[in-house]
Length: 169
Image (cartoon, rainbow, N blue to C red; front, side, top):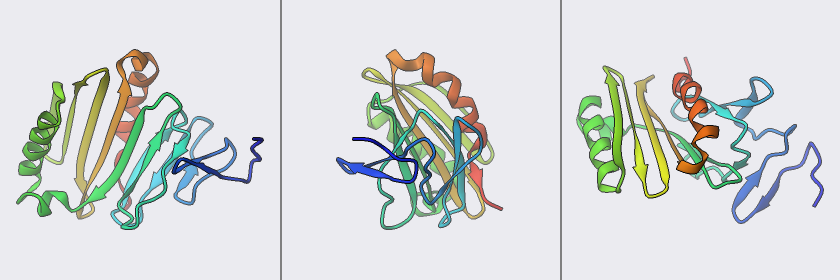
């Protein structure tokens, strides 16, 4: 099937973005990254070009899921999780870490500041990286799952992903 620059193709519930085409909530920032912005919560993050498939947006508008050809996944979303699930962001960090461990993630690294939290580790043959920040009245998160065998391709992307996560002014 030939792709044209102005067409988006769907298969198995995923949207494939041709190199010159953009989804409604993505804007091109350079040749290999796009900027995702979520209007509902103000979440904003740079998305590496390796994530070429975009799942349909959820009905509630809380974020998007991006996938790569090798099965890696980037989830970007906003929520009022810190105050809905727990009483404050500090309690949310603990809840999130506990949730990851209950989900079978062997945490190898974690760091935190007053308004952010990072954890990464492994689950089976995958690396799991999670960052949550608080700002603009919401919690903003990225969750990246990628194969350990592909870490040479993905590890260098994590820094920019993490630094770019935030909220719209």
